[in-house]
Length: 217
Length: 342
Image (cartoon, rainbow over the protein chains, first blue to last red):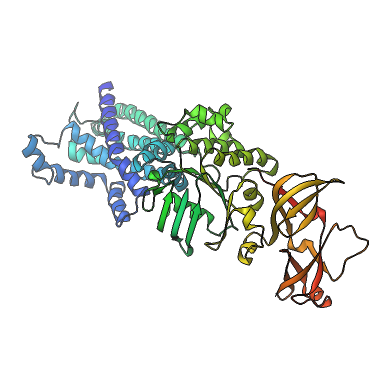
């Protein structure tokens, strides 16, 4: 069970890091940028929030499959294949959790007063310095809250993971997949233990996010 | 040095300018005007925070079209604009020029050395202003832009801060200080501009500007006060004598030095002949130059540069016409004296 938990932890952490790496610049762009099609970009990025995870997983499978739009060039260039690997579990979890980080981070960056950004510029900071020294630090609590939510969603991910990564013990079988396996094979006790563990993680993550989202400035 | 030619900007329906500015290096310039006159917009246009057209030269450097961070300015926005997540020291250090003194020394210079470790939320209005000034000075700016620096500070707390502001230009910086408070501006300014509805309606050294009556638009923008430049000299009996270009007034209080006398138009009363027994010390014989009638009251502009408001009934009872000989009276206690700090 410890190995199971550690694998889940690893997958959720990597997925969360990917979300932050990709989501932070996008959230800043959506919150501060003024360009045509901003709303459209946002709608597209938010779809995994409402799409059934199995559909997200299926689309990812089409995209990253052996003959997929991205899978083909990746295979030809490196000989690697994503589906049914630990990387696939990370990818699935990160895509499904992404909107939670993006939405929270965008709101946090939007809540930083325009005046602080204008003052930073008038005081001599360029756009990058302003983002890293003023805007993001002022939004830090909201960003952490978004990361916590994304982590919580990633560790509980089931549908898209099953579609893209399968249920391979030691590689892609996460806690939530193991709950399904245990319950399906009649081991209610094990399913119950794992469920309790996931419940505890969820409560901890939500509590942390709520604590962080309280306004400080 | 601040030079602008045909500077204009528009935000929504508000249009600023086009206007010209000429402020010499090392001058403390005050820009006065009622709220909504465009004072902040002008500062933001000079700082490059709003899109503006026209030529802008700051400290000898053409700055039109440059992003704000490349303009040689020090920025003190209304309320100080300190970054709440940084201590006073870190606020100063964040934007300090490489060749500027250390953050602690910059804070020391504005009397805020003891505040280095404090966070903005724990600072009073005056302390915030000091830290914001230290931060702006740390950029070694050619031009310091101040937006209503004393707006959040009560009267008793203003004096030391006004002295601090007055000292900035002495140290060689060109200061452009925007305020709606004439007293504040006159205490420190070596150049005065009056902004009304986006236009510069008067500008120049305040002692020159106020030795003659202001244009009516400018006077109205300043709250329709009588505002005169002159010199105070102590006189017997707890009084002082104020000597302006065309007028001499007794003023309550012992005052000495150059300054300004200010009193409402309604504090000037008008009669046809000198009164005998009266407490009024200032009985000034003069003539009516012009009369501006409104439905219920009229503004009299007098030959000695004063303006008085009268009811229309009083105007008719006195049968006043332009050219009429009159006596204008101002109580010594109605005159607010204002000494220059620079």
